[in-house]
Length: 366
Image (cartoon, rainbow, N blue to C red; front, top):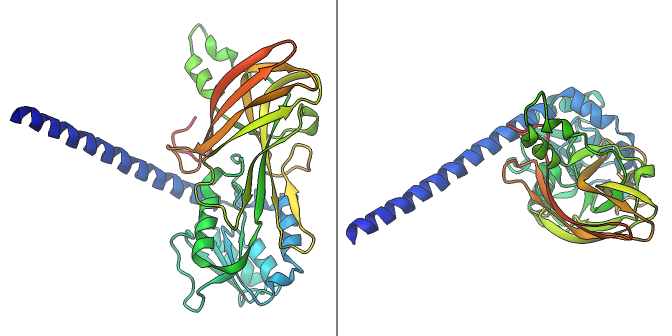
């Protein structure tokens, strides 16, 4: 009896040790991913890509400049990049602006702020917003600015890159009651589109070898592409709405039923997700959309290719469930389960597919 108990205890400790090892490895991997992310985010070509998005920058400019809400206020920008939005706030007569970023781009931001004569208003701070402390004379901020919608190029779907959690952290720790967030609302939509079939068949027979394991890996990837309005085959469906004043951390973990009303005959090869954001405290109610029918933005759209394309006719419906959650492997990735239930006049399909939306910085990814 004693020997049996000893073996049982040993097994429990062994299991606990393995769990601890896996946890420590995951923490180490996440730290490496984070370090690489901020290293590459500090590269000038990345910042140039963001600054060339005229839709994004025009919306922030119009929401901030000439906005009386900023006059004599203390402003915090989370993820300031080169400091453009912080200078917008300074130009709108903010009293103090704290521009925070964990990437080395803060070296350029500080120089740019000085070159443009805003050094007496804008203070550039290097570090993660979760780790920094505000200057001793500032205890709270009146306004938070943040481009939290998956700011890096190539990986989005609104929640990618974990920036929303950083904004929520700053909101809960430092924003005064009744303070404002720019932007402060967002909606995630789903639609059906026609498009190319993924050309993955060559993995099945490459010089006589079966590489279908790679095909299965590629089929599970959500992709970021530029989708045009003429590809849309259905009405859109709202699958998630966010109020930034009340949204909790981990908001990227949700599921939503959807119904897509088909608007024309043809093939549906994929579902597409896109988002809109709004600045409710801007004078003109500024907003912008990443819809396929709207002007181009660097976010493009997120596409989920179906294993079985659907032949649809106008008036039919594609129904199902859309489920999203953060990846366990990477702090910047998202995973999805998409259920499709379609019963058309000429064919019927019921399927379930899992996808990963990977940031290009994810270590070890194909």
